[in-house]
Length: 446
Image 1 (cartoon, rainbow, N blue to C red):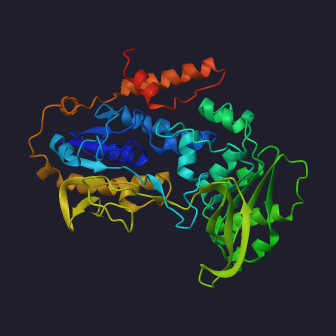
Image 2 (cartoon, rainbow, N blue to C red):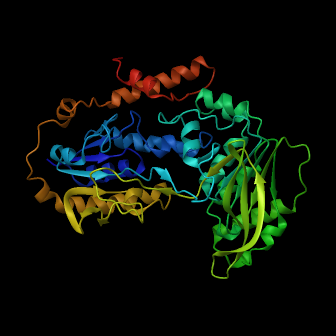
Image 3 (cartoon, rainbow, N blue to C red):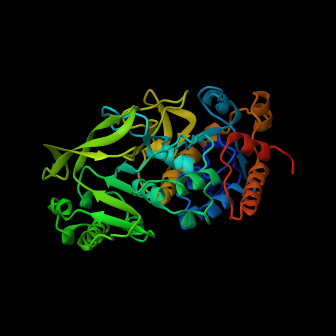
């Protein structure tokens, strides 16, 4: 019987576990996560008003409830206080790391660390009730915000900044975040890209949602659209539809009575965040122009955009896991068809899948073929891996190391507590958002 640990319970981890149990009738899989809650970015990265995407939790649940799969939450691997990867290898025949890309890329410009300047991930974690997130006063004194980036995450945070309480109340957003967003005095968000609309990374479905927000006007500058030399008719379907939507909005007269405005800006490259009283007060952009090869070049003309909140959304990046090799250039673990490489040589029993393997690319479904490739490598190595002598029960060894895993029943208790909290507040399910509450619920016998 092959015993495999999968580190990370997001889509890549669950698809890896699913592929393992489907292809080998003897394998047993423990899915480890440092959080007491499963599902990774499906729980903590999908906006609360995107119920259809969040419903993917149902299919991930089916994997984690398989008779040969076991969820072990609250298990930190690597880093301070975490279980060293080498120790994990002693407990399992193989370990697959599916730890994602946990941080945002930086802009690398002056003023980026001013108060009021945040990564989009930090903001998303807060409104998604991630237990590591704190109420950092994101919206305190904020009248206008700038979101740097034109991907789906940028669209998400832009939409959440202007959502009203009536639209968010039926979601699972934590009560403190709901109250903060409802009381916000923010009236304008500018979402800014350094290239043109034909190169924007958002999907048309996400983009169109901005146009359907109550009491919110979406403004697009015709002159900025005209800078893009691309003929929409010659573009792939997705970018062509994006350009068509943007041109339609640019042709509409402004909604004078709207309480909030979203401005979609293009061909502006951030060069500095400007301070006002010790915190960010504006973003200085350089106007760019197409360079004829799909990129842009600076023009030497600048524009200062007032903002008391700046969220950067220019891509995710993997972080090193202590004890594993790491390529800082790509932000990934070096691998060969999913096999971890140490000094260029496959390391027996160590594998990767998901973003930490290939970088933050693709959609949720892209993790399926990625996981299958890794599992194919692992099962090809299984005859040699299976000869290792292991302890009878990994959980006993974890407990001996001072780690008390949260079992699946603990997660079910959290789900029940969140439903009960929502009922008390007159809402649906409401997420618990701090470590103390989550662990107290998960580890109290029901």
